[in-house]
Amino acid sequence: MPVRLATWNINSVRLRIGLVQKLVEEHAPDVLCLQETKCADDCFPLSAVRKLGFEHVAIHGQKGYHGVATFSRYPFVTVAKERWAEKDDARHLATTFAAGPLEGVTVHNFYVPAGGDEPDPTINPKFAHKLQFVRELHQWSERIAETDRRIMVGDLNIAPHESDVWSHKQLLKIVSHTPVETEGLEAMRRAGRWVDAVRRHVPYPEKLYSWWSYRAADWEASDRGRRLDHVWASEDVAARSTGVETLKAARGWERPSDHVPVILTIE
Image 1 (cartoon, rainbow, N blue to C red):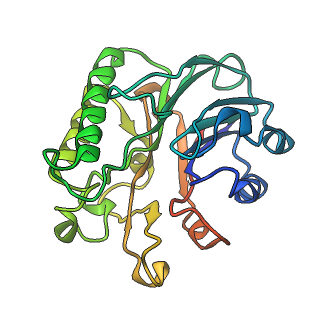
Image 2 (cartoon, one colour; image 1 turned 90 degrees about the horizontal axis):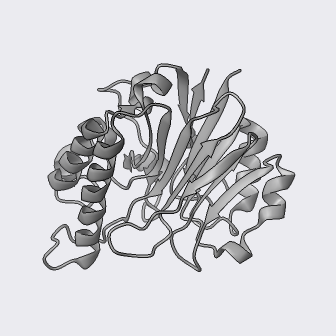
C-alpha cells in the first residue's frame, strides 16, 4: 500500500489551518509533518486536525515561535522531543509507526534555526546557534548511521547545492547557502548515510525550490527561490520511494506560507 508523506513549514498552524485542510483535500497525505507551528500545545487546533482524518497526532510546540507537529492516519508512538544546541526551543519531534505500511519506521521532524541575516557567528548569535545545531545533527546522524527504517523531514533552512537556489553566485554570502552551511549539511547527510529522497526523483542539475520570500513584489515572476525543505531517508526506505511532488502552486494560495509542501510517495 503506498503512503504519501508530506512536510511543510506552515508558518502558524492556527492562522493557516484552512490551508492544511486544502492540502489534505487536494493531495491526500497519509502522514503530514508541520514546522513553525507557532502554537503552544494547549492551544493547538487538534479537533480541526482530527476532522481531516488524522487520528494520530504528536505535537511539540511553544507560544509564538518554532514548533513541530506530526499527523498520521496510522498509529505511532512519540519517541523523543529532544533538546538541541543548548536551547529548549521546540524544533524536533520523533515518532515511530506502531502499525500500517510504515510499521517500525521512525520519522524525525525538524525545524532547523534560520540563522538571522549576518553569516558571521562572531557577531551574530543566531548564526552561531544554527551552526551548533548542524554540528549536533552531524553527531546524531553518525550515531544512528547503521540503523534502518528512518526518515528525516523538515525545514532544514539550508539550500545545499547550486541547483537548489536561484543564483549560486549571488547567494554565496547569504544565510542558507553559505559554504559553511552547505558543506556542514552535506557532511551531516553523508555521516548519517542519509539519501536525499527528493533529489533521488528530481536529480541535479534540475532547479528545484520550496521557499520564496515574502519580500518579493511578485514571487512567481521573479522565481528567486531556495530549496530549504527536505525529505531524507535511510537507504532501505529511500529504495521504496516511488515519486516526489513539490507543490509550487501552494505559494500562490490565499495568505500562504512562504514555504510549500513537499510530498514523498513510499511503497
